[in-house]
Length: 145
Image 1: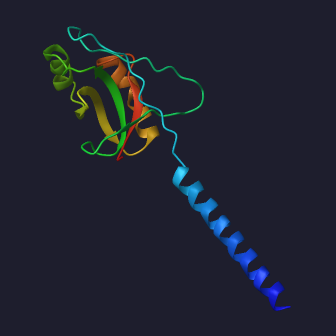
Image 2: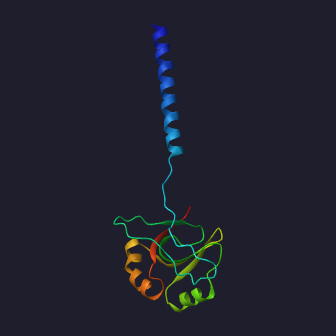
Image 3: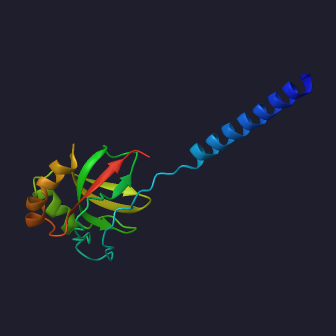
């Protein structure tokens, strides 16, 4: 009888360890799927009016991870690969009367209007931004990494 009790305890202990190990592995390997903000790539000498997101019916907001920008929703009006926005583009931003930020991420620069508290609030401003700055502006979400 003692041998059966010992065997049962060992079996329970092994099963518990296996269960806990499996749970820990599942938590560590869990990753969040995110999309990178799709944007047009601009040649260094161009004006910088870019963007190519199309409406798909379901809302999948592109995400930009940044430690420097205020988290929230923005309207992306420009993307500059490995260069800063040119003077013409910055003049249009300065004259637009919109709150904006130019986010530097690994040498790439995102020109963003906002921040807005919600997707709907940002979306409600898109028509005025498109008419005055960029007809292809779209909503992105800035998050902390």
